[in-house]
Amino acid sequence: MQEGEGGGVQPDLLGDVVISAETAARDACEAQNSFESELYFLLLHGILHLLGYDHERGTEEDAKLMEAREREVFTLIREEFLAE
Image 1 (tube, rainbow, N blue to C red):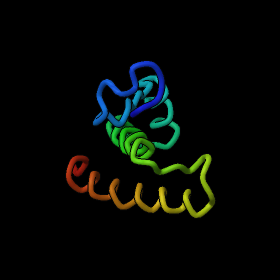
Image 2 (image 1 turned 60 degrees about the horizontal axis):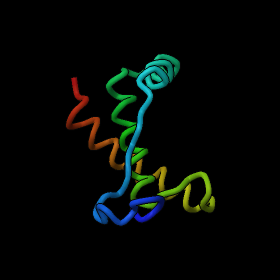
Image 3 (image 1 turned 90 degrees about the vertical axis):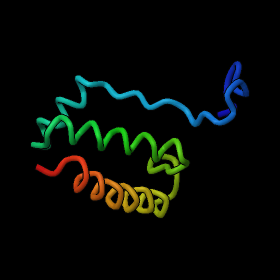
């Protein structure tokens, strides 16, 4: 991460993922998902952004690529960590 003041201090740092627990709880309720599942999904989504995936400013193809990767990885997360 090279942006901003002190950007070169930790060159191996990708960035931060900040999740609002309140928003995650509301979104989980609306989607009828568990809070834990929503947190895992939001963390994954944020990490993909840090790795360069972009569904907002990229092309439609970029958005499809990010969504496909999200589905692929979240399926693994669900099987490993969210199985009940």
